[in-house]
Length: 251
Image 1: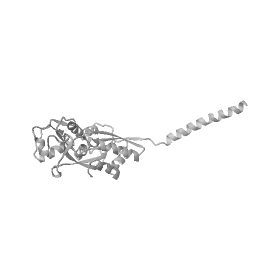
Image 2: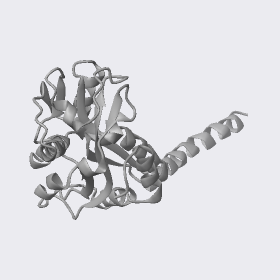
Image 3: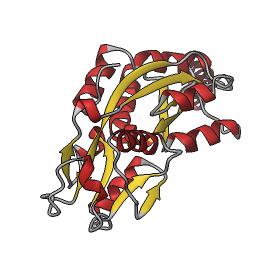
Image 4: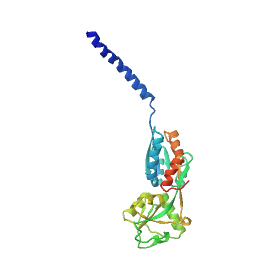
């Protein structure tokens, strides 16, 4: 009687190491997850969050983490050796200045400028020339920021002199000043103004500037293959549809 009761116990005892061995094999067979860090221009914030989710769905072994800032801030991070895998800037100049740190870049999208004003445009701003009015508080991005450089270019070409009340570190900061009522107007990208509580004044094509967005893998990446795959994916039909829907233009 005693020996028969011991049999189930003995069988269970023998099963434990077998299950443990299977569990160890499952862990050994499981592929390790890859976390990519992508440094991206502030104007890509909304659309890249969508793109990241879409990419992760297609690539279940990869997580994409973004760090958004002005392109000049991103460049400083790269030069300081910040751990990252890919870079997307809002201009070709910043990327070109980092050519020793990146692989060959690919332009993934383009953008244009618009004038953002308070909702319903209470100051009745009609064109770039109107930004020189003394009764206006105008905010621009700093000249070392791509959108600030583009803004200066279009204003200079139209011989418009603007004395900004502040110069901001990125395009989102410019938009925030207008949205919060701290400025009457600012020059931003079309894609940024589209989703915020502001009015816009169109800048005609002949007076506008085209912003190109190059993407590249960083040479210091520990996940060069996966980072390269993500950069290539940004040129696919799925990624381009997301960019078009957000207001970006084709490369």
